[in-house]
Length: 115
Length: 115
Image (tube, rainbow over all chains, first blue to last red; front, side, top):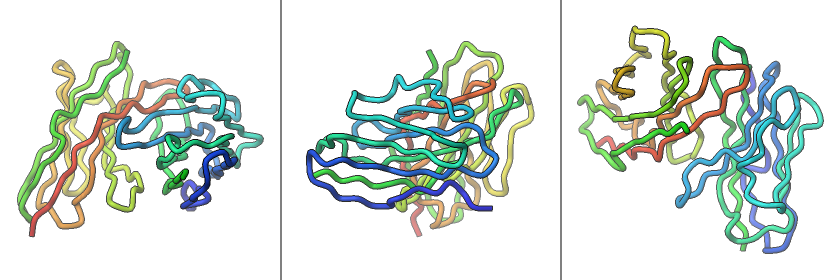
């Protein structure tokens, strides 16, 4: 089975540029999560979707960040304009949510460097 | 509020020895799940083991086992016969049971397995 697929794996961009990170969740999963990992703040949940609907975006740092999930097999996280403090590893994760519990599986991450 | 605490920033163990990583958590939920994730230098987040709070039996996966003390809200990870490939950052995580659950992570423990 293919796992969670993220692209790009690495991106270096200049401050002020738009950055788009992409994610394909595991087929059949109905929940999708975007996490950010930095040395200072550890792993932070930015936003999560259930059945393509954003449920909680309270972790999105500011209006420069936006996320979409147009269908069950694709999501994007966009930063516009990007700033050096956005440099981090961004993880997408997915799960099959059910009341009996579920395990969240992570992609390999997108390493973003903003210079 | 849910919290996860890992009080050991770094640990070291000799190859073939046993090591225990500590984790405490706090939640007001009765139905929840606990996880240990491993993050090697590649940064990929790999699920090591999972425990349902309603199960009294401690989870085991090959060389990895947990000591789940529900009353004390403690969830430690024991790695037996440590191998060089176990060198990684280990994260303890908590998720509520429910239709959609999100992971709350601890700050991690960096484990170094020495030859």
